[in-house]
Length: 323
Ligand code: ACO
Image (cartoon, rainbow, N blue to C red; front, side, top):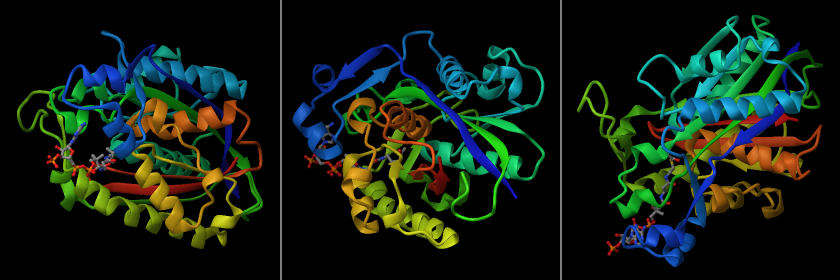
């Protein structure tokens, strides 16, 4: 039985850091309000001309170096993003050409903040079918470009960045001790569009538009949706919260992360949190957090890692990975 095994992981953050104090000079807000409601202290912001594909390419190169692989070893590139360089072609194809490869397939995946989990689930189907051998799953975003910098209710929440995972098809035994993606559970419900969306696009205003969010409504739905798909993952694999080594949630808000972990009975010391330094980087937040926990030695080979996310659409999902 084929499994999608993690070979490497990498990330990239733009150089410029925007602190809560910086934001307090731009809109009517304070470090205290932002930290208390969200846990965010600072976020990175892309430079002029620094696009999503550039961030994604840097993360992809870091992941390949970590894996000890060459670009030519990759035959599937999936880029999860809601902030593509262009309406088309796909940002993934720009990353593919940046890597200097012209074989295999590259495409974008749009599931907003759930994009990376959807990307892992999608790559896993390709790899375990035997059709492809090695995948780069990238989450890359420049949300700074779709924020209304006059709207204090949204502009304080997001940041830019990218992360990537290299997955490789390898034979497993078919049980929960296998390395690789053990299960993934992806969901969506388009009735919730108006709670979190971008108010532009070719079919509406023909402009790029700005992110709009009913924060309280999103918060109200988030914990239930997240805990549902995580429970699905536990049931599908016969595992429990006690078996997890690490919980690496989408980094939207510390209160959502803490409430989800608490409801699931996941010990606080198993929760990887980077929202304080990165803000919400949408599809990039999970691979950025994975790269941090991998680099500082927390995540080790053989560890059981749960990733989950919830975002615009709504979309939500989980994936359980034995590293
Ligand atoms: N600084 C200071 N005051 C603010 C700010 C700010 N940046 N933003 C809002 N306020 C004010 C509001 O105007 C309001 O004032 P009022 O009472 O005088 O009307 C007050 O603070 C409370 O506003 P609420 O929106 O009710 O605050 P809440 O406690 O709900 O916190 C927040 C807002 C942080 C957005 C919260 O609702 C939340 O975290 N929601 C989930 C959002 C999220 O995580 N989205 C991303 C998930 S999906 C994805 O990742 C794309």
